[in-house]
Length: 565
Image (cartoon, rainbow, N blue to C red; front, side):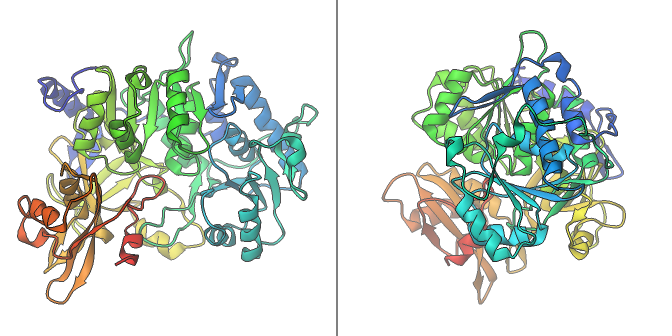
């Protein structure tokens, strides 16, 4: 569909009429007018593999660096072998296995194999320090850890610091080493996947309400907390998207067709795990992994594999829009670019589209959070409302509540966005108090996002509640100032935080990454002053940085910025 290709086209009116039919607003509650989908009562692996007989010989996953690849038939069997080997090693139903590794071709084998064994899979950022991993190990108490040889020293230090008992089983997944390089005291994953592993006893014995994934929330507004997601939560979120072609970007791998999806988003993040991995395997896609993002490797992947669908966070879209090494041939096969995890600015979307082929569609999608498995809302195919995150997906209700009274608000009124649906987590691990603060007695998940919806039920995220700057009682959203700053021709990136002020309480301070030398603080101040009201002025000053600290999903780490004040 081409009507959503540019912001200023006559097709927008047609698109709006179409989306008006897709969303329903009643009594200040917003639901998708797409019919609710059936949520099957099956565990996650069964959901992922339910159509595997239609594409058994197609490649399921391939390492974009080494070329290691597995077909769907192969990976299904390897998952069962890993599950059997874990049980033989003494792990029991409900035990936790932690994955500490970047995207590799073996990631889905470990993930889905552990799930088939009845384990809880906790995911950790492989770039974490030993201290950061320690906090997660102390909280989740894993009985097994899967990692790479290159990361093992950090993991071993974290185990030592955490006092995790009993000592967990360490499994080394294939990296660039040979089998003879496997460290002493660890187990080679390849040995757990041998042909002689007896899988006859592998069967799911739990319930779909059992915890299956324990990711840790981003920590951008506090210390990370374990998010308890059940089979039902994950399967619901998969079904909510796969079941509707209007919001599912990939087509089933029938006949000669197979979508190719670069796995750039990290699988340890819920967005990458659910959307870029599990959802794509359920559709028979070819998932091409990259252990770390490097421009040369990424360009090679796009060129050689002819990627058709890209799941991205805003930093990747910005990279594709601005990097001089991006050639037209790298983007020629892309049908859809799906941007989530953090808000994508309208200007950034337009910059990317100027480089992309006319047939490429970009969606500001996957508005959500770890606590919602993660998808809550998204745009439909062909939409050009880049400033919006779209409307609720099937089986999901959304509303905006007043910050003071908690009452539901009408269209165009700003408050806290709340949602309710089968994808909402069971709660925070060992934190009932924190759970009660975010999920109310009626099952509404309070997102902590400030926003509103329009008359057609499209939602707009203004900012995080805890990131608001209070200037003389006025609420100032950093995202608004950041959008203005990034529209400056000599600014590549920007972030805004509040700093204490004796008279105003707080005032905004900007951190700016200049596009060229010579940009002055006064230039930046005057640029903002010409566009925004007095209480939004940069009275806290302007600081210049070489980069803005962000999480892997692209969210600005404001706590780090405040630490350098």
